[in-house]
Length: 353
Image (cartoon, rainbow, N blue to C red; front, side, top):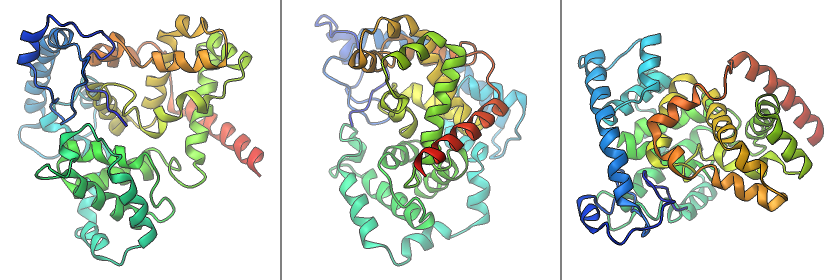
């Protein structure tokens, strides 16, 4: 899986940018190698503006936290989260907001016990097979790296597979765990964050039946029917199932779909506000690009256009994009989503029984 480094990947490489190229490393701050056609000048222009935002947010977060490792949920904190958590505070806020910190404190030594317990050989082999496929373009996951994050990733996945036997291991979990390790730089915290995501925020996404995942894809379809009816009509006319165009958005939580910095900003809100953020992001991508999608003339054309909507300046400017997800889709209550989930889940169960 090739990861999208933050910045403009869709723009063609300009050979006249060697001076800008020299100023920016070939590897991004998270360890991902930038592609050959990476547009360094556009990236520098974007980052010069975003760094001002980051600096301002960092000062505000430092004042809010005042060196404490706890923060109470409030409208102010929610507003701060939506405007972005600085990297130096990200792991802490994710842990607190998701409930992972509480779980870790209530279960001291539990993660280590899982690693030391007897392991399922089949589970180990399945996880081991996916190790080399996890972020081959990230220098921190290479065996030559010191420390090599592959070992931490393996441990987190093995521990989780034994902790939640109903899930075990499923492809997609490796990429999510990898991101958690990159941000927290801590195996145990990554384990508890994974538990928060898979156990509470996105239940039944990774169980063998994947009922939660299937349900939420259909829920998105219903939300599109209500909020972007022309696109829903086009999907129906061309007989395109939602799972074909959005399954990777849901199962990888936008990893390798959107730029790294944009994904992290989405996850800031996901850990604080829960799963409705995924619907906000998906609806924004679809609604903002509806004219492009509606130009599709056939089934493969629609699939290609859904790939197009996740590229370009709109998603690369993560700060502007995150503002859009809270305005463009309009009102989106958890009560509405819960009701749609009940209806869609019942239909899926009836179809599969």
